[in-house]
Image (cartoon, rainbow, N blue to C red; front, side, top):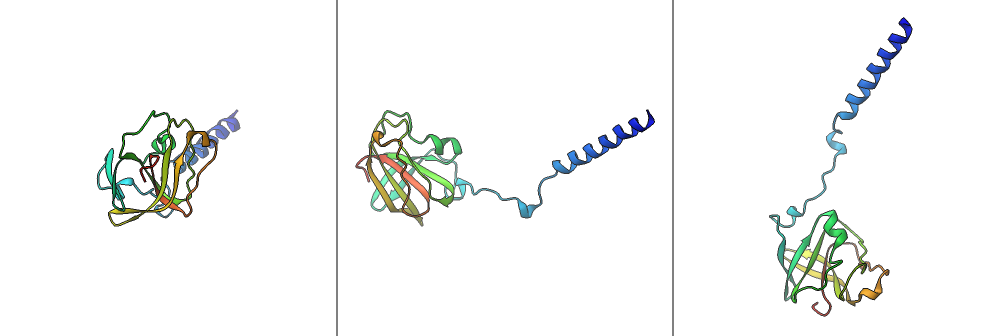
Length: 152
């Protein structure tokens, strides 16, 4: 009986030690903070005037996982001269498709130069019927804008 008591106490001490060790944060060299959209845009904003060449488009910012995944899906339309700017935390080759879309759009892959953006690739007049085809940028990007078809 005495041996069983010490076994239980010993296992409790070992389990408690593991618990305490696992509760500590990882050393700083192993932690990486994702860049914030606020690094690109100085304040949290819902709408932004996006300058692409000589055009200015009023865009909604998609900068959270939920907004990036949903995009313009489910909407009936976009106002003329407006769109959605997708801001990814890292440069990559992000695919876009027309799942649950109800109107055709232009998809532009962008790079940022100072306060304006330059189109590095574009898919024009992408129709909802193109689903499940996935569209990819010609080069890794960090920004994508979707507008009504014919506006870019």
